[in-house]
Image 1 (cartoon, rainbow, N blue to C red):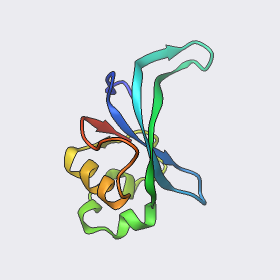
Image 2: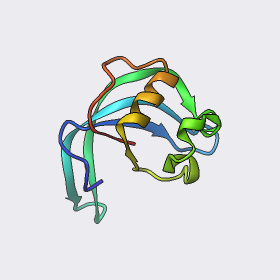
Image 3: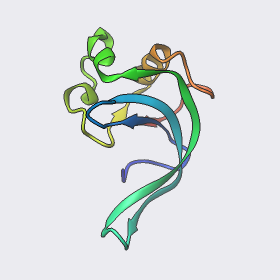
Length: 107
């Protein structure tokens, strides 16, 4: 999370056991800061748009272009980097989102 920068686009990923899927895109509106209440750190994000079709983890694992994507190997991670090629591929798989695909991205 410390590497996330203001205005970065990120996928919003449900990591629950029954619903592991990318469901939308958010934008970083406040970079990493220490959270006094939790003793940890966080970033603040705002919703950009929902994916037109949520992308299930199993669907991502079957896609040959995503086999090296760290989320497919460790699906419980909360934040992983997403390169430009992966970002475009995932947006295509989900039919896009309510906004424009592109930019420097995280999950």
